[in-house]
Each structure stands twice: as C-alpha cells, then as structure tokens.
Length: 241
Image 1 (cartoon, helix red, strand yellow):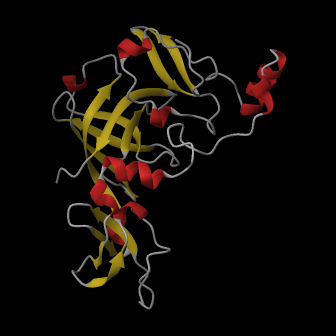
Image 2 (cartoon, one colour):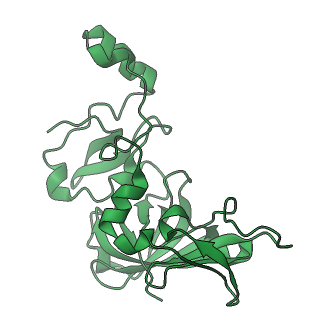
C-alpha cells in the first residue's frame, strides 16, 4: 500500500527501516512513529525522498493530476473544519467543563471555560491579568478541572516516563540497559540528545540531556538515531511520577 506521507522506507541489513523525509519542512515522522515492523513490510512512501513540495507539485503536473496546484491544507485530516475542541470534547467530555485557574503554590487566580482551551507552556490569553510575574500553563488537570499556572522554570523537564512504546530497532528494546538516541517531544522542535532506559518492552524512562519546556502527558516522544535519518519508534508521555 502506498501513501502520500512525507517519510521514507529504506531497506537495511535486517529488513525495512523507517527514516525521516528528505524534506525536513514536510517530514511527518513525529506522527508515524507507531508504524510497526509488520506494517513496514507492505507500506511504501513514494514522496518521502523528494527534496521539496515544489518537486511533488511538478510531478503531479507532469502526470496531469488536478491537485497539482491545490493549496496546502493546514487542518488535520480527521478535523476538516478546524474545530479541534469539539473532537477532544467527544473523547474526553470533562475537558470542556469550567473550573479554576490555580497557581502552583495553591492560590486560586481565576476561572476557565474548560482545560480543552489551554496548552502546556501557554502564556497569553490566560485571563488572569494584573499579576506582577509572567505565568505559564504548567499543568492541565482534567480530573480536577484545573489549569495550573506558574513561573517559566517549572516548565523545564529532564525526566520523561514513556509507555506504549513501538520499537523499530534491530535489537530487542530490552537487550540494553540504555539507548543513547535523540528524541522529539513536540512536532515543531528538533530532536534532542537523550538516554532511554527500558523498564519493560513497552515502557521506559527518558532522560533529556538538556531540559525541555512544555513537555506534556499525551504527547508523543519519538526516538531518532543520534546520527542519520533513521527512526527507532517511540511512545506516549504519561504522568508516571
């Protein structure tokens, strides 16, 4: 099966491997880390090796495809109207219920119309003006319906618990005590050096050599080779500690 995703499948010594797209601006590896080895056996990504979207359009025009000049979409394919909040509300109804905006020291600073409208690391639009210190969203507690805010230094994270790991390495994940790779915790950020310590075949502790801001449960933590374009899989960040 061939797809239009910007990612590459290359044959390695031990079988098919997943690699980042040639065009770093279009690379979709952060979203496709959960592709399993079995799926890679029959998947093909014919656009992953192209140097740019312009090259894709040129090829489409060459073959007379009507979509050659179609504008790029900024929406997620399963949210065509751009209403992400409604999708999340269906998956987690409590996320759309009002609650309190709470300082990390316990002070109640205001109210909100649903944690669904906030993201970790957000500073603007909190609705709690008049404070002398700049505050950021440092935690979203759906169960308590709380948006927790605090100073920027609370956003720095060095240790990340990861579960539901899909491993794409040649050796079993637990065959080593440590894997020295790079990881990406947000789609828009470059991979950073890290030490991955397997706990089981599907769980691990990830130590970032340089702390990252805005790491949040529910985001993907994707594993990349220290050098080169290969993807070693990844998992989901959760509140393990």
